[in-house]
Length: 94
Ligand code: FES
Image 1 (cartoon, rainbow, N blue to C red):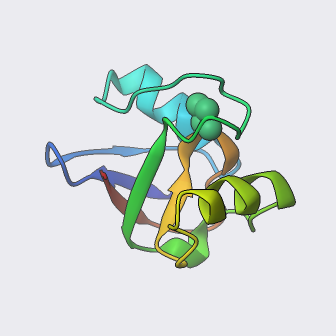
Image 2 (cartoon, rainbow, N blue to C red):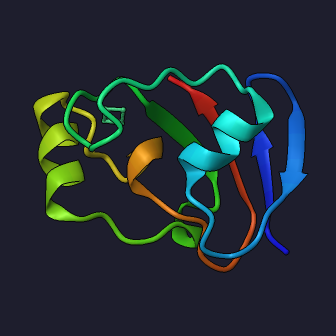
Image 3 (tube, rainbow, N blue to C red):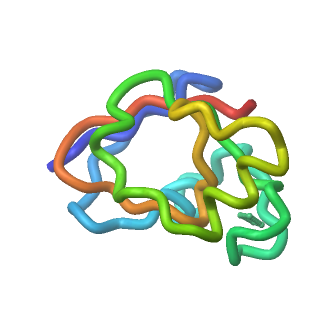
């Protein structure tokens, strides 16, 4: 199972493929804030430190929000808009 590491605290957990990053954060009580949970507000932005290829591809809404924030750089994702897909990930809050 893929390992998800929250670099901001050093904690790590194994999850099923297809798990939403939001669900991991909320279940682990990691300090990632959420607002709309719909890819619009940008509150849940995180910086992916490794394994960005192991998250589901970005859809239009997430792209638009990240562009508006000036952070559509391939390293930032919205935790409410991506799922774990095939391998390990490490990330931190922005
Ligand atoms: S909580 Fe609003 S974009 Fe994720």
